[in-house]
Image 1 (cartoon, one colour):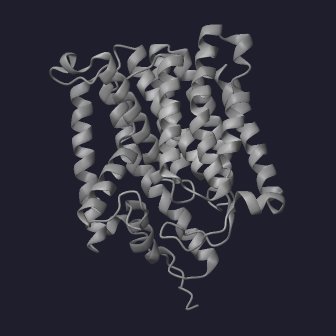
Image 2 (image 1 turned 180 degrees about the vertical axis):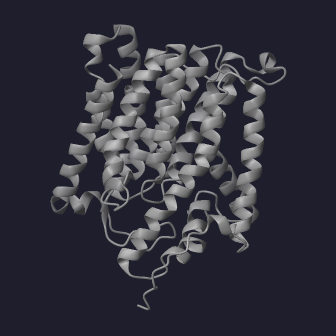
Image 3 (image 1 turned 120 degrees about the vertical axis):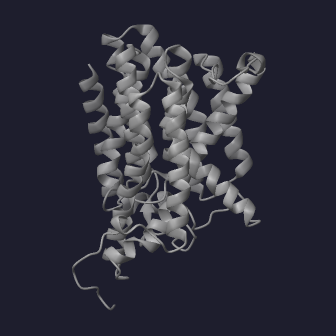
Length: 371
């Protein structure tokens, strides 16, 4: 059955993206990102920002066969999760279409989606595996912690959505881990959701990487971030043998990126909510990829863009692989988290100080254009 969910959601997403790209001229005035001047803008022409629409539609249609093959309890759990994600997805999609980012409206949508998850699915942050947690995790604290965790992770996925294929591929890697652990512990809700999401995102990824013909947009980034965050909370809540540190280490790359970014902006006395061009993926693009493709030609800028993402796929895997192997072993997961944070800070500082590790730099043998 897993193959059916994977295949159906992939085909639906791929075809939906095909239609969006093919008929871009009819909706570009609404869906395309025409702002090419912002600090986080590196695309060279307007691109539709509604990839999240294709993914969400492919997901909800892709799980419908479950009504014939799964228990009603499981399939209803998946559908309730989708319903919980809708306010946040719709809010992000409106941002993509209206080209406005209202922080208060966005936060309100996150809170509404989190509350729906809590009351529809009953999933909350119930364990932390830290000393004296039983004194702290009373119901109201669990609810507030769940809302905070969901909002933080959703924003972190939007933070890393900066280059072709970056956020989508990282999400697939995380969902593959969730699917593996769910298979090991026989959690059908987590497995069905993860597999269907993988297919839907992969159908989009083929249009997004390497050519950047369509973007996730805020709606897509929020939807994917919410689904992964919710599944991470659920797998711990529903399965006592899964360490809560598995959920943290699984999503460690976007979480560390977000915390480090906020700390950097506060240290510089910048507004934490305003974008800048100093994320790790942006430093890799500007200070490492120029050795690979240094021309300013549009085609070469696109190549540099797409060559940046695999570095971050690998970085994310350095957390996801140990999380998958040690999903029930808290001590090993804590050591992984510590090593990852140290490695991230070292890598960021090395690149920022123009001391990028030579073994990470790919130098093209072709002659650079002078244009």
